[in-house]
Each structure stands twice: as structure tokens, then as C-alpha cells.
Length: 373
Image 1 (tube, rainbow, N blue to C red):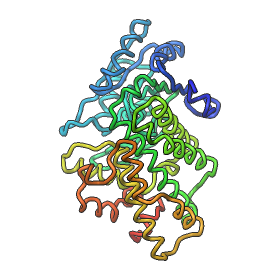
Image 2: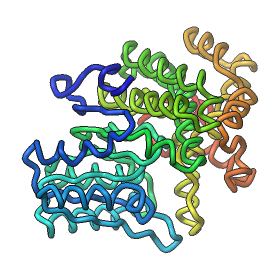
Image 3: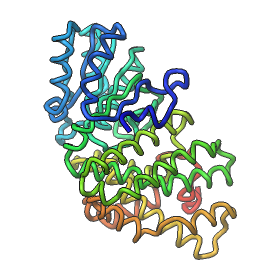
Image 4: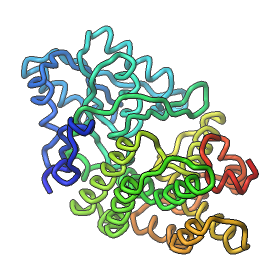
């Protein structure tokens, strides 16, 4: 497979990014794409690390090819983390306005993309995605999870017009980022369950084709767990294709149900706690994978107690891997497997299991039902 678009189909007619390229050297295609589209003043957004990886090179090549380039490096917060908060978004918006940009390119992983997608949406500009690590499934999403006054919210934003996922860059990503991408995909086990639970108990919208696309991406990812842990090109390619397909599912459905359930709510709860207490952040996908195992155990205990469940959900839970198996897979992929390995104390773990549903009270997850809300 040279390009994910060849596998996924879609394109502009389907409202999807076009092209979606997953290949060696794909990042270098971003510059001619922008210029051929008549986008002559581009803002390239990165953090200090991703600027060194690809952002500076893209800006330099764009300038050498006749475009007016500006590289904007998002500044970290007081704890030393680059986060998708109001300050970072405003930094990107102001930089684009001062440059007179007619396009924005995100050169980075999930946080940079969330900043850029909301800035681009606010300004009415197209944005191009150049991922630097296979760490999340949100590259093609049109929702932006942002931190606003310390609270995690997801706002409508812009999907990229094109994605250039460079295997040379992705394979060189730090191993924890690769493992985080695997954790984000593993979370689909519980998010897909919660989606069915919401359909059965609250009539939430559901699409079997979209669910099938997400399941297929999850299964591919799990079947390559060992190769992902070893960081082979085959493993990284399979992981990134799965992340892209999961993101396409989000884009096609228009809401986050296919890829975000109780495991994501717990991840967000932990993230907000770390922000409030001034602690360094933990990778999103790492939190999601660990939370997925905790949720799987909780849900299976609930079913084993004979508590009420729709038949479809009981059958689905019987097929869901238990926490021990999910932790084994996380370790095979080289990532953390238990909350303590994320610096999360038992008290915070238990608090999240009791309270994380409040992060998205409009979602009818089993976690919300267990907690009586």
C-alpha cells in the first residue's frame, strides 16, 4: 500500500481529505500540494521537537519553491508541556493573521493538530496534516479536544484537506509515541461497546458500517501488536493505517461515538487533574489504553453480578478481552499497562472510575449507568 487513500477510498467527493498519503517521503509532497492549490502564504505550526523533525524543513522548502512561509513554534505552558488550550490556539491564530496566511500546515502529533484544526476553522482557512508520530487517531477528525480554563471540551473544527503521513518520519518517532497510538486504538474495544450500549439504552445514533470500519482498524492493529512494539516498518504502517481509518470513521459519522467512550472520559479526567495540580502531562493514547483495561474489568464485573444489560451488550461483553489480556497487549506494544506506570495513584484511578462520566454527560455509557447518572 503506497497511500492510505487507495485503501480507504473517499476523497473530496465524500468530504474526506484528498489525498491521504501513507508512504516513505510523503511529507515532501505537502509543499507542491500547497503551491499547486494556489496557496502561496502558508503558516507551518509545530512545537520545538517537531520543528526539528519536519516543520523547519517544510517551511524552508516551501519558501525555496516560491511560497511565503512562516514557522510558528507553539510555546509550552508553565509545566513545560505544549497543550491544546486557549493560549496555544490564540498563538496560532495571531501568527496566521500577522502572516496573512491562506493555509496552515500542522507539523506534529495530536496536540499540534488540535491547535491547528481549531485555529483553521476559526479563520476559515484550509489546513494540511503532516503527522510526526503514529500517536493518536484524530489526525483526520473535525472535532478539536481543547482545554478551556482547565476543563476538557470538544469543539467543532476543521478536518484537514490533505494528509501526508511519512513512514520515514513515523518510524523514527520515539517508541512511547508509537505505543501511545496503539493504546488509543486498543480503546476502541470499550468505545465500540459503549456506542452499542448508548444505542440500546438511550437511542443514540449508530451506524453499523462505521462501526465495522472501526472494528477492522482495531483488529488490524491488534494483529500487528508485536511488530508495533518492535517499531518495524510493517508495524508502524499497520498502526498508522488503523489510526487513519479510525479517524475517517469519526469524520464520516460526524461525532466521536465510534472511537471515544468511558476510556476516553477517564483519560480526560486524569488529564484535567494533572493540569489542576501542575503535573507534567501523560500521552493521551497511553492513558486511553490503560483506562480501557480498567473499564473492561469494571464492565465484566458488572455483567458477572447479573446486573441488567441489553442482550446485545451482554453478548458483546462476553467477547470483550478482559483487563489482563488488554494489559498484555499494551506491554507487547511497548507501552504502560497499569495506572501506576502513568503516575496515577490508586485514589485517582478510583475517583475517575466513579466520576469520569461527568466529562461527557450527554453520552450514555455503561460507566455513567454504573455511577447512577
